[in-house]
Amino acid sequence: MKTMLNEMKNKKNNIPESCLPLFEDIMLISDRNERNTKFINAMEKYLTKEQCFTIWAKNGSCRGMKFDKDRKSFATEYGNKPLSERFDIFVNTIGSGYKSKPNDILLDEKTKTITISFACKHGSMHLEKGISTSLEAYFGQCAGGRLYELQLALGINLKIKDIDVTGVKNSIKDPCVFTFEIIA
Image 1 (cartoon, helix red, strand yellow):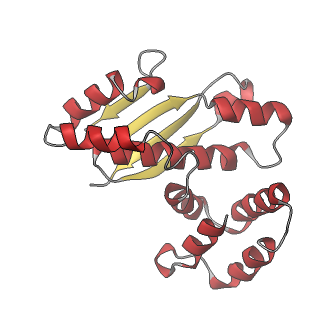
Image 2 (image 1 turned 120 degrees about the vertical axis):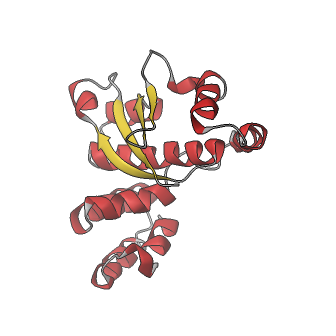
């Protein structure tokens, strides 16, 4: 949460300065779970959806995990190939975990988007325990992690465009859908 607060203080993210003391006070809570829950809930209450997307994109969950070496290596090896070819290789190699069914991860070069239907194993565990943040907030952080992985491996810049948790609301075994806009 500390890195999220620092990101909020960055003027280019257009977070109202009047909100910052609230988040700073939340950071003083000693119980980590309580602090994290209150922080995420406050983000949803006081920030716009787009502001939350920006913060999650820079501080998503599962960032910097042991797979970064593989992602960087992939980017180096295939970086000179066209995006569609790089994407296909990614989906069939190191990104194969996203593809349990056809069309679970799609590149649409016309609309400049990547869409992932993603069932987060960790999200399911938290839902079964009864998480105290909204599904949108929980999976927003997850979307930030997926965005990070895709950017690192594919060598492109992305922005979170949409997070659809409709499926998860029906059943924790159903995937949520992340849509990322390709911005460069």
